[in-house]
Length: 345
Image 1 (tube, rainbow, N blue to C red):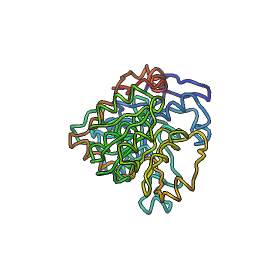
Image 2: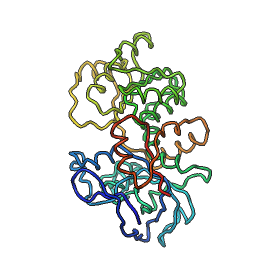
Image 3: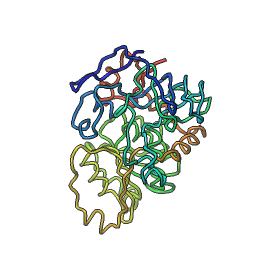
Image 4: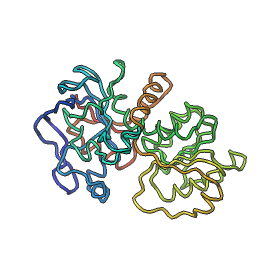
């Protein structure tokens, strides 16, 4: 089969023929229809410090956001069958540690990630454990199916913030940030602020969120605008997805006293912060979000998408073939896009 292969630690990938993966008794084989490019794919393409820190596999097939059709199941598999349309939960839990056994599989002590620690989905076929196959409604398009994985991260982060009726500021309008804008708007947050230095993505934010207030920190004072629209208090909820120290500090400055701030963005360096004034004296609630809750976030995401109120398709701005995977990754890295997808079959 054809796959996007990372042969070594040098920058780049290769499109090459590799063996069809064999499956165990608890795995499923999937014919990939559509995959999407994630920020981690950019890290793997460049092979930077992030890859070393997470002990990424090398060599391997990359890619982990995908949708496809089940074509073979192991003898113990009962959750899905051949012909089912599925999306892949990319966190592979051990199922045995304390976290897994207390409903927190998404932060498993021995977590592996598809396309980072195991072969991924930028390929004609991929295999995943049965527990990671999420059966989609038959009416789901392959494009939307490929977005479920990143969309569920936004669902987890926004709904944990309990944003209904609250002023919500979303820092970072990459694809997950754009999904967060859409979820917050549909779930009743008001006003919703979308903050980014990328004008292209701010325009998408205006399309997918109701009455969204967009702010470019290079041109405007973020804190002043948010406080002016909230009677001087600041945002009730801040969701940080930029992975930027400056954005994080501005997020804390924009937060009202007794507000909540959710950190989703992955920072490449330590963030210095006036902890006393931004957290202690504000009585701020600070929490992190990684991935999504298995499978609560998937269930909620499916219902939101099925409601017809979401506009996540508008986040897809570019489409490529499997042979063009390198171009898709470079497009994502350049940033003048929403979510690039790769049509495989």
